[in-house]
Length: 104
Image 1: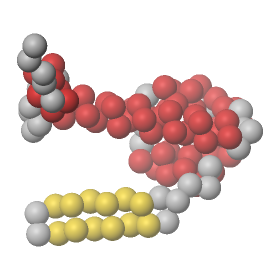
Image 2: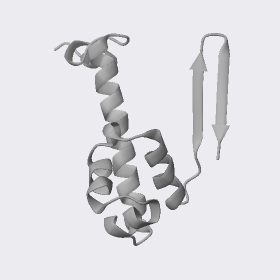
Image 3: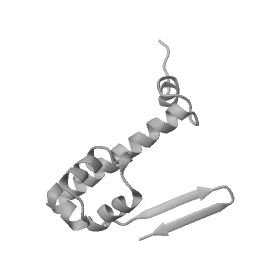
């Protein structure tokens, strides 16, 4: 029986790294993980979606959308959520010949 590495399976099912399909998949996965982390942290802080929404000035429905899929949210809203949850924020942007680090 032939065995396959995880990379080989991902390349076959999702697409090779650098392809549009793989980039979209990885982006959506990261946004899903961010949403789940927000939800877990909110719950650990004993906050309801409504309470978190009030802290950052949005409706409960917006918090629900962020927790279920953070891909359709502005950076400003995400930063306000992280700030309300007292999260340490590290943002790293890498461009050719330029690296930017922002910590809050």
